[in-house]
Amino acid sequence: KQEVTQIPAALSVPEGENLVLNCSFTDSAIYNLQWFRQDPGKGLTSLLLIQSSQREQTSGRLNASLDKSSGRSTLYIAASQPGDSATYLCAVRPRDNFNKFYFGSGTKLNVKP
Amino acid sequence: DAGVIQSPRHEVTEMGQEVTLRCKPISGHNSLFWYRQTMMRGLELLIYFNNNVPIDDSGMPEDRFSAKMPNASFSTLKIQPSEPRDSAVYFCASREQGAGEQYFGPGTRLTVT
Image 1 (cartoon, rainbow over the protein chains, first blue to last red):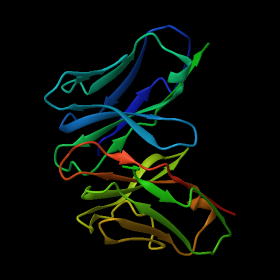
Image 2: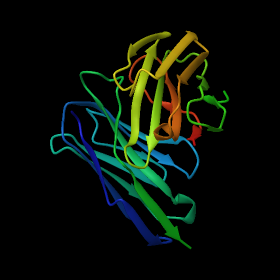
Image 3: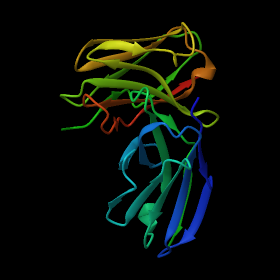
């Protein structure tokens, strides 16, 4: 069974810093990987979707990379802002059943003004 | 589009009572997913439907849990009888046919006392 791990579990940084969130998965046979943001008491908002054939995706200050062979993805946030404070989750979809998502436990980010 | 709609947003009930959670997916989406989120276990997929048909309910924890999708615009997740360990946030998500992005609703926070 696919296991998804996110490190660190929590991160606190001053405003303006560039930061990297890590996601690792045990089975490289994935269909795609998706990064989500979750605000307290709210649902999940999709940030970036990377297909298995892609190496990275960018949206504004966010850049997600995928190294399928090593089972890793990173989410890079440039020039962090207090509004970026949230929990970030990654989820992988296995190649043999793309209806299933396996989620990591998330990284709780706090950006201090 | 209003996105995925869930009701109620909060539910507090006593052990033994029946609980029904409701979901309206995004119009035109063919797949619907029910998830449960707890601190201990993170996000878990309970069941998903394609074209209103349940495809995989292996994540449903017990026979006390049941889900239906009578038409393309409505689904329910029922717990009968409810127990304190069912307390969690329950999310519904929908997706267009294929392996695109999943869109999550705001969730229902269930507390069973």
